[in-house]
Length: 193
Image (tube, rainbow, N blue to C red; front, side, top):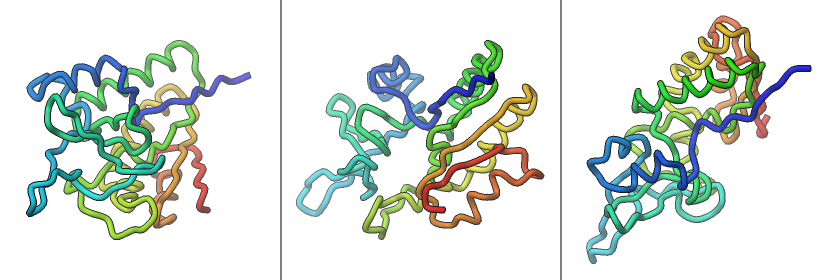
């Protein structure tokens, strides 16, 4: 029998200590562990989210934080803020979590929405009418780099991986992640295919 764990590396709970620290102050060392953006203001001075991306659970993908005056990104519910994979400290810590479970005998992982970890750093507005913004994060600019880093850890342990990869607009792009010469993931499941 093999043990495959479900591992979520795109986001945490808003009750996680990292996010509590991140939310506590703009100068907190954990602030950059999540994706925070300043509001936009229209000509009438009304506050708006940084872009028009929508959550997978309806509504804006941005939640305004009164305490710090900025929005944080949550591609799912507001209680699930997205981690900032552009921050090397975040990636190192997540890699340590992968090793933690492998060292305890896990044989591999089902990687939840793993293709969402890289976002277009410009955070442009979307023209999509459904899941606005997904064209900018479902196979972001550094996705294969990030998957390669995880793949190297998994290969060192001879561990298995299957990535959940929804919403990709170009299936050819996502299929690259399972090519044998790339060393990223073993398998994927992609609902649109």
